[in-house]
Image (cartoon, rainbow, N blue to C red; front, top):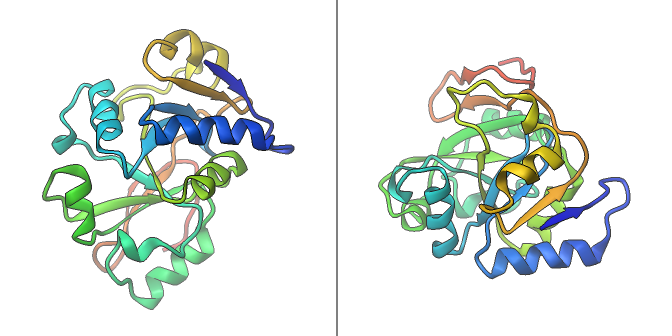
Amino acid sequence: MLLEINEKNIDQRSIDIVVKALRKGEVIIFPTDTVYAMGCDLRNKKALKELARLKGIKLQKARFSIICNDLSNLSDYVKQIDRPTYKLLNKSLPGPFTFVLSATNEVPKLFDTNRKEIGIRIPNNKIILKLVEELGNPIATTSLHDDEDEILDYFIDPYEIYERYDTKAALIIDGGPGNLDASTVVDCTDSPHVIIRQGIGEIDL
């Protein structure tokens, strides 16, 4: 199903449809401030396993990030962060960044793994932020493409995405053209912080 949502005039009924799908354990495709992404309800184990299956991996091997709508509920998933790190996040988000932070004990339970860190995103996109807010908890997310792949033009066109992924995702949000550039990934698990992938986001560490 392709569902058009205008970021400048978000229709609550459309948001309700997507949230209902997420709560049922469906995988969705949605716009961010970078490339289109695929995701599901972080609190739904069945959905997490399906998201991993669509990426061709076991959930235990997945390196999914999570999308929050603000910094207020980070403490559920991220260990206490120092003041410089918090200031960096507060200054940069919402924005085209993924910050890798030390995970709480809650994260391994969610992903059936022993992972010690988690990537956090707060995209500057009103559609996905509204979805997370209405869902009431973060969305687990992964890019449509593999990191080694070139990001091809079809990743930015919702209709092209629909043609390719209609049988895989229950719902694809058309939020307008996407971006060809991925997020900038910053490892904040140690000091000094390190950029491990330079994407669209410019940051001064």
